[in-house]
Length: 546
Image (cartoon, rainbow, N blue to C red):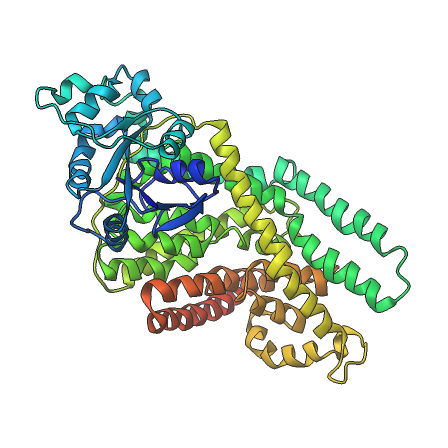
């Protein structure tokens, strides 16, 4: 049996899907988190979570995907936001017209009661002619397992107003404040600055915990494990390759946690939704819509995930423009890279890193204004402003941190091991110093490209190129090959950081771009961004030499 969870964007479909299937799909308080159908089979029942849709006339690619899944469903669970129930009736009636077993599941009923509203499930079921549930997901799951009576008769005498009262729907003080164009933008900038301050300032939790983690992993644990190893090669592999490279990146976990904690708070509190609404006019000046705010802020976490949020665009040209500029937004993986290069030069790297992050945003907006193509109007649900549930924030934070740990202990770990082998063996597989290794010979071939940035060390050139696989590899490679630090001056450091800021995103983002915009377009963007990265690195290095 195939059960499809369908409804308008931001109604709570993915949250219900996670509860019914014990999954951990990403949720969000804005339109565009779910961009393709996700399914999971539990005890012979296949649950399908589809992107949000407003009606059966697809407006975008994600809505088309939703309609196709709904048409093949055995049972439809129409997930409806109680706060906007009246606006959702069009889709609900369209689903009922499909003549499939359909039930309505109401979400956010507690918020409805808090604003003085109410809903009577029995009367609403009589008004719609379909069973209505408003309890916990467990209650719905039990009903599905025991069998729902879908043959609910529609009573023409029952009016909608008898079944539902929206309560006080006027904007509260918080909504009015955050829907102010100036305040919402100021609050967002202040929040991002505070996030960097808490993560990067040497006396703040992020940096303090990072130092403790680095000492624990790279010093104490590394020394404990390598103490009994007799082989010099094996000791170097464990100390430098495993604990130096992999452990060096894992030590950034506290600062990554601060980053994702703030982004999750902005999302779950509804601030991001309000920001998209209030900045629509500003973004239109650079040929983007307010909806691009979702993608751009998602880009602070992961460029690949941010690219997938563009699936909801109805205009291919607008989607390609957003995809083209997203790599300029510094993702979370670039944070350890900036810290690796800037920390040796600045006792307090907070101002420098903050400047690089906001410089990335400015480059993104400038690039969007230059690119030709279609424009996109804003069509999105606006979430109310409220303090998020600590449990919800904790679950999402764990989800993000789990992904970071898996990536570092998986692909990054493999890359570190391969890099150690290449940097400690010659072409004849003799154990040699790094300067005589096969990696040194290969890296010296690309070194001339980085010399105009002030880089004369093949290890730095190799590390910079490693970022095309995964940005975490840059920090891991520096920790592996340069235990004492990059050893660059101010001008060279700024040049390399500018290159990292402007260079194309990782393989995952490249793959996502190919999937959404095609290989040809992705390759064009890749080489343009690569040229901009080298040019930017050269120019910044020259300016700092003056």
